[in-house]
Length: 135
Ligand SMILES: [Cu+2]
Image 1 (tube, rainbow, N blue to C red):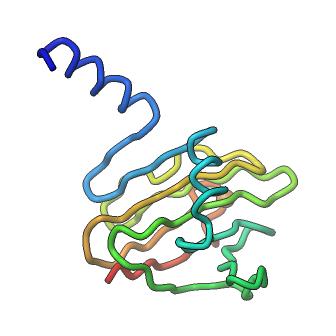
Image 2 (image 1 turned 120 degrees about the vertical axis):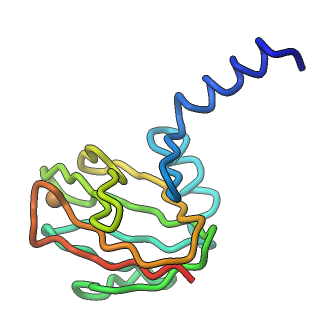
């Protein structure tokens, strides 16, 4: 592969995947495809009634989840299950955006590739908080 095709491949990758310090985010149709094929291997965090709910394998959603654990590299699916609220999830730990804007029914795939603690919050609804412990 020559230099130009490498740059092109890199630019195409950047178009769908935004890489910050230790968080990789995939949105749009690609995120939906990953969710549909790999939802059983990841953790599903649902945003509903301006709160976070962890969806278990049986499909139940536990109430107001404040803290949960994730393995480094494991897929975290963030789903906006609201009827009309848009959420803006950011990481208060490093002030980075996780998702700038997530409309109802949108799916995002987030991967934390380093061990650590991330306190996530919604910029629009300050009471929406959840702590992710990456092991
Ligand atoms: Cu919100």
